[in-house]
Amino acid sequence: MLLFDRLRKVLASPAAARPFKLDADLLVPLRRLAEREQRSVEDLTCDLLAEALAHRQQADASLQGWRRLTQREQEVAA
Image (cartoon, rainbow, N blue to C red; front, side):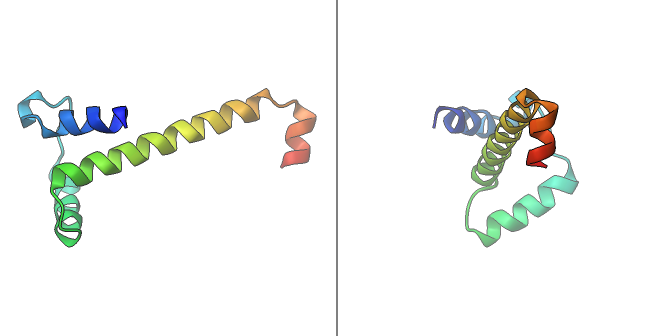
């Protein structure tokens, strides 16, 4: 959970210290979802970001595995 803890720390810091800004197009649905789940926007954002990063890492690992296959292995797998 080290990644999760680091994300939570970044998101819990003052907005000026964050490496990014959330625009209204993202903040409004985040607030609605957080309210529906009875959670803070920061907790929800941290969880969503952690899930997105884990998904991206898995996709990258899968792509690397695909690229290691020979052309014939890719044809058979497809």
